[in-house]
Image (cartoon, rainbow, N blue to C red; front, side, top):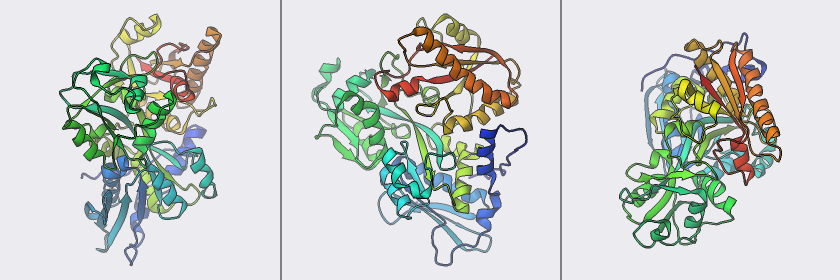
Length: 459
């Protein structure tokens, strides 16, 4: 791996919320963790437990990148003592071995390990649950900016055998298929006879996410006859060899299988393309998290968090098949369903690959959005677009009064405007489009939260 230069935070002139990010992430110089003596008894300097989606490849790769960033030599990744366990090793300046251990047995196991003191970080492919926040309250607020780290964006892909002609399904159809209510491909307009179901095991964040996004909103549960897998790789390989199989998996594991386009509510069918996943518009997009206890994290824990958020860390994210949180401008294809003002944007401007979203039941930006403020500002500075080039477009969920929906969507855009303006941005226009162009169904709170978003466009 190539060695990246240290990342130095500039704190002067940064708005208050962004300063909290910078203070937390810059509190540890890059050299501090590696300069500590390697434990004489080979105790791991980092212990990560949880999500298989993260722990199989991304987690070890991030730790290896950190080890190299810290100046360790002969960095290598090897299998651990059991399936779905990995070790990362390197040598410090004195030739002593430095060790990190990653166990990937499902997101829920990470929070249990954090609670019991068996892990420094919990890797999770879903947000922490209320029950887990309560159980871990003695460690601090696990939903705080200092504890919750969004390290990448992933998408769940619904996969088929590559020869299956089916192109798209709705979330409602998917729920009925995986509940076992739709039993043949012919019922979906396809061919092949009986449907074979493939699913991740009950401990995995991948299954939790599929359950929360697909099954539970429709009042369904996974069919008892579904084949369950702890390994994402094995599930994908099995579906790609079964002409009547269907499964769900993280984006990096599509491999030889075919991915379906998915629609939610009134949204158009969307394939799991990088741009749609990066903005979290794709119905089965999700965030990948690291959670650490916020009160007294170790030097190595702090260093890994900062590395994961750094440009070099996000390069590692992209190299491992996930979607990095690097802001880019993308061209949006105009289509007839767009409101006139939005259609004009699609024809004349470019959309940035980030959406701002908010804390549940709040007008405050969520933790990812707080970090995205700095990412967007960095993009605008780099490309000379700080002054009068930006259009913010707010969206929301339906209200009984359409004017109220439009007003609320514009107020969301104004909340983002305030944060970006503190960094020197000036704006061409602030737009509220109410409940237009939904990306999720408004029948449940999850979907409504997803529809409450702010897009950034640049001329």
